[in-house]
Length: 257
Image (tube, rainbow, N blue to C red):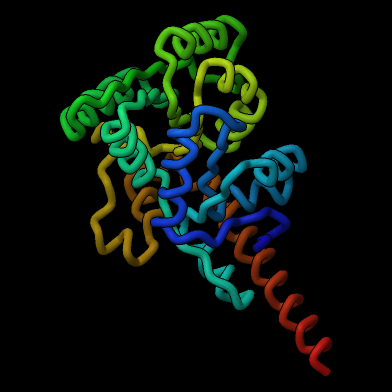
């Protein structure tokens, strides 16, 4: 299924995790790139051709956000949600049970350290390390060298990148040969999930997650950080996705006639 021209894969969470486990344990094959797609991602991709193309080149695009699943239903289809915050835990569990190493890239130094400590406490024998590059419009050459050195030294099979969109997806795409050369089998863009794992940002209550209102919860917690971008991106997504669904339904009706 495509929404605003971006491919989304209609796998159940169980099927997606089974595929990730298979790729994580594979001895050979291409690097598996997993993107978690929400309404803001699609709004950005509708304005940025390069970002749009990078998303479509990912190995697996999973719905992360109720807006995306609603848009799928309006088109007569169905997408299952698998949030980046859940993926970090699921991948950590897989690495623990399969004897694989996990690396967390991004978030602040304190959040990254606390996330590693919490994951080690949750999953026996888990080998997990992290690195927090200096934040800016892009990762500078010196920081990129440090990242590559850390990856070569630790040689993780799984990598969770928490640099925020669209930077994390663009960075993964640009560095895919570097990641493959360091032994990474699966790389996932997880946005702010590392902060949730660390406890630096409170996880939404289960009823909020079940209702698909994480975006509203995050806006209430971090209004200064989020209000401006959500005010522009979410209405844009709603308008474009709604118009696209209407056009698609009219096309189907005309075809039936």
